Length: 197
Ligand code: GAR
Image 1 (cartoon, rainbow, N blue to C red):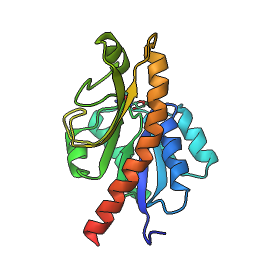
Image 2 (cartoon, protein in one colour):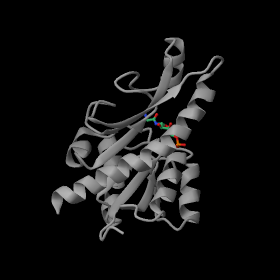
Image 3 (cartoon, protein in one colour):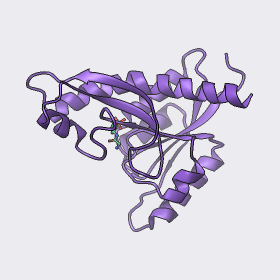
């Protein structure tokens, strides 16, 4: 067992299946990280209920009617109060302010449902299908102020099948994401721990 487990806050906006994958992976032997907070900009995010049921601290603050910087500050307060060292975005559908991202540089990670640098932003599956691509996929990358452009950590390819719709492809990409994200996060925090030891 690693002596110190990296403390991770996960940000979600929706169902939180990647959050669940990260959480259950953290409970397997020898995982070098633990989830100390699940936070959301959407108080109705389904993943919050699951996190609570699993005994994880949760926090929710709607961004509606708030300045971006103010909302980021509220989220960051929750992260710091929870003692988190890393922020992991898992379907967090808010752009974070440059100041916030810069402060967490190297300690904030995202998963994006495409083979970056292809298809930054939204509607990735529709765009991959319409382009006639043979594969979609997912990318885990460091977060930098420019959207979906930080250093790529790991990727997984997913074949696009005849008759795939954006929904059917999204579902399979999520299965792949659930394998990729815990592995990429574990490798990253373990490497950081070695470097700073
Ligand atoms: C995931 O497919 C993730 O890659 C994507 O949202 C989904 C969240 O699903 N993220 C983005 O599009 C970020 N730009 P989940 O809530 O079930 O984990």
